[in-house]
Image (cartoon, rainbow, N blue to C red; front, side):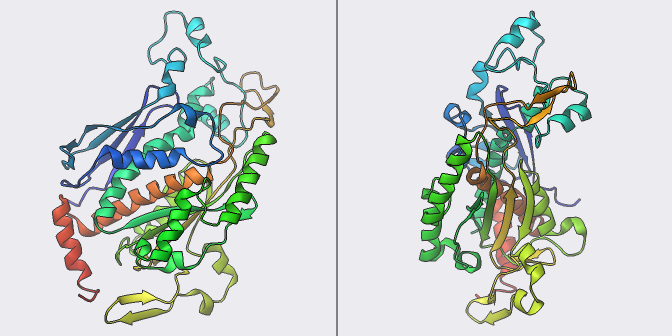
Length: 409
């Protein structure tokens, strides 16, 4: 029987009692703490442009299965994240039918039944697909609140990758019309933060309110977000995820669904608001000649295989080539506008302004953290597929033996 995939499932509504996460087929013997997950959850909640919900929620994970005395057991890992806003929605989002529906639906800060459709959101498509007459049944699950679950699952995958020397980072490359000035070295340095200059770049990212290392661009990004908020509007942008320390050989060229770049693109496009993904220089390469695009191969007896450049973004033929993995994602502006667009009412079919719900102005900085999580989940699964093993110790032996076949000792 082939090795089972490392998979995850999430459940829970935006204003329900909790988010529930199940991660399956993580190896045994991995040191894992709630602090490691909570750190990533805090990073997701930050960033200039976040809405009022972030002032309510203080996300903390609770392990309820799969971990004992700080180590994974090899059994499914179950986690929950309580929704602190649930206390304000208990009547409206109750699981059981209330004795007095009219009274229960009147509780809480929002209209009892949502029928005003938001352009750009899942409202109309979801209501038609599932035959809902209340759009709240759609928006509660289509909400970006669900990404907290992804970050929790991704944090577990990230701990596994970090155990084997893989480092995941992200930063805001563009917000609205403002694009950051980024040194190409962060995409080509094989050692990641072991290089002091690279480490300083990522320290500046984490210190920035918009997760951008370029101070001048950060200030302009904040101005653009504030201007959009004042106008009752929203703003999108582009974030970049970089993974250092990946071995050669994750993924496969042999079947379409085994190509790593395809799997990454699918996972990242599944994040709410993401409308475009590119690996490496992606679309820009379409305007250039091959002689200026393809990364010249080098070999050094001390270092092993390397490239002069990293235009490909760390994959060739759907397989990692040992260079840093570079993936960029384009996020559209949030669909909920304080000054709503004209729309149509689901029930009456009459013209009506779109529904307004508490929301963010810009999620690009936080979306980068979600992007890291989704990339971690794909990479951890590819790692397990390549090196097998039911325990961390077994995977370590397999990895060491494999890397010795192509890397100087």
